[in-house]
Image 1 (cartoon, rainbow, N blue to C red):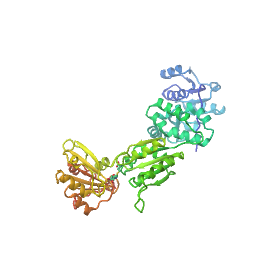
Image 2: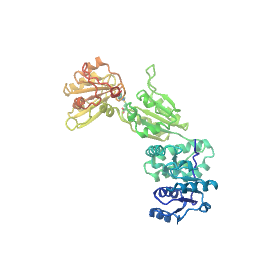
Image 3: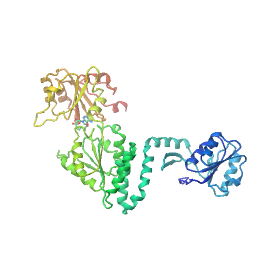
Image 4: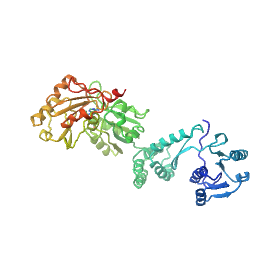
Length: 478
Ligand code: SAH
């Protein structure tokens, strides 16, 4: 580390700026933003700079620089194009043990200006130690996009409560948990959504009801999407990276689970080798148990938590136990698989509506209303329908949907080993018997399926041996 990053308190303190051009103006703007009273000395001073100083209690000296000007100042910046003068300023300052910056001349600086991300009271400075200011600026630009503007207002809000929280929680550990919950929970989310007043009221309530000895955690019910980690939402990723414990099942792809915080505890609640999944009631109770330990619990679901995800049941239990929660939608399999297979779910000419239906059979028959499903102009997407494929196709035909209606299976949609099998209601079960595409798989029925021949964007040769089996895009681009 060539420079020690420090934050310099300049509020109402005096600073000297030697030079009166555009570069000096940029530095003056920064100094003024930090509350400094800036004196500028130069033979010619940019009118904009004069105006800035007038508005901020600064001073303009039109004339020659001399060392006595440093006497009552806390720091000095030289921003002239006169090398000799810049050097003089440097030596005068060093002699007085005073911090000096000579713009664009690193050897003459005892401090440098970092690239700044300003979310006051949060301020981030990025420095390359003078080696590459452009690189520092590029990094700053990345941080700018990554850190929500709301951080500034969040910082201001919690600043107001700092003392009060300190006196409520004498125990450092419970105070830390309380602040983490505020800064990463509902209250922060409200601020990011621009609802500062609601956030303020929530914080007041949280503080009023806080138990100084015991803190309840929070549950995030998050849709992890269909498999491709790039289909996660920013919000899902953010919560995944702050959770203390993660509960997931086999529908969540390992690549998505990998993106959870490294040191979070991971609890698999899917089917084990004996083929028994953890019962839903036990999962509900686990969520409650972890949250009551003050932990931030991530319940990571495949696709969207509210589409055949039993998310509603989990929330019901949390509600009963007074555990705070957040829900983050995910891209559901129907949307993702159809897109990655080049099958639009609706189309002006072929389908004006789409239905998401469970294909799971109860006692070997389904209680689906097939009369409704055979209406023309609608696409049907069966979740959990692979086992009942013959039954579903047979019933749709029996209730009047044409036997040659196009139908497709999308297996492991959006994953590197995605496969698509295309046929018709009459031959798809037989094609699948040969192809044996594995679960998880989705069945799409309707005229829109025929569009995939033109719209599939994988670009690889299509195999015709049993219908169409299309490999995944990732393999193509490798
Ligand atoms: N909540 C999930 C669905 C859970 S039900 C969602 O919104 O996507 C489980 C069913 O979803 C599976 O039986 C399968 O039909 C479908 N499914 C989920 N992920 C899939 C994938 N990557 N490819 C194909 N089907 C998928």
